[in-house]
Length: 150
Image 1 (cartoon, rainbow, N blue to C red):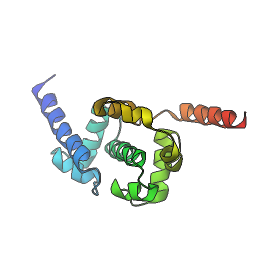
Image 2: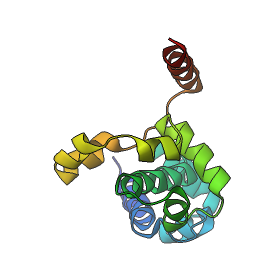
Image 3: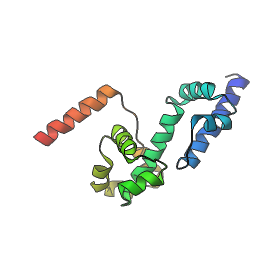
């Protein structure tokens, strides 16, 4: 890597750290880009190239990850939505379902004793939501529907 590429990665890490720290606050791409010392468009391209997802997608994944922990702790869906910085319960529920594969309410009702028994660092890695290709989401939904019907 060239010194310039290393410097760009360091700037991108600063923006990613901002997202990790301030996920519950209103963040937009121009704000993140300022922390990376880049223009918004250049920042968005470089972030996606470095981390495999857009800055906004990374922010929402971080918010959903934190909401999962709050829901496991018994917080209501509405309170978890607001606590992680989402302002629309509908958008939050849609994104949660897209990333996790079940609604926030269903996730909250489910038993989470296995996660509680894990060390925090392991639980964080194992429960981190990941974006699945649309084809995989559709097949998983089909499997869930078939399992419910059986």
